[in-house]
Amino acid sequence: MDQTSFFSLPKPHSRKHDNEWDHIMKGADIQSVWVENAQGQKEREIEGKLENYSLRTKKVDPSHLGVDKVKQYSGYLDDDEDDKHLFYWFFESRNDPKNDPVILWLNGGPGCSSLTGLFMELGPSSINKDGSVKYNPSSWNANASVIFLDQPVNVGYSYSGSSVTNTVAAGKDVYALL
Image (tube, rainbow, N blue to C red; front, top):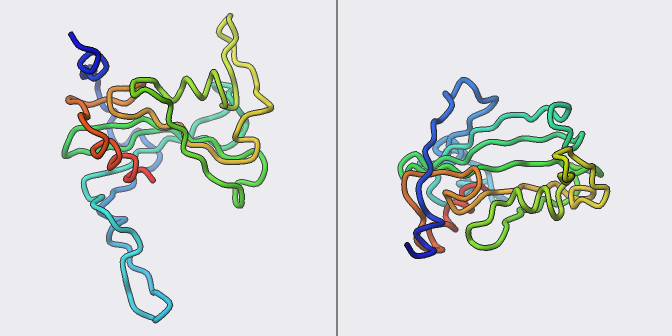
């Protein structure tokens, strides 16, 4: 078995029912948003083919995991047409969430979960040898909101019945999330 096949094997999964999520945003609904431009004309605010995507979101209770006290959301970006589901975890900035920048963190590889970066590099907490969580005062979310995205599919908690075979396909998924 070559390395590419090893890192792309589909994972067995079962999807939670939609009523178990706090919010579900459909890409088709986003595309139907029209805005008025400077000339008073109506135009689409968002470009791209998002109708096959949806975003499932669950608010994370910070007291359960002890990772950070800021607002947190996790969930999946779903491409139902291609059976792709990318996991993300969002941490709001500790400083000024309304004005601080937003960072998208993608670990390298491909094949390495962004949760590695979350818990071992720049995230709001790290994991001690005994499995306990340790607060990280130097986390990047000290002055920015951070999205940790497991990509491409079949990395970390992301899953699919197939694999992504090129950068363009993986890039479309990241574009849809943003």
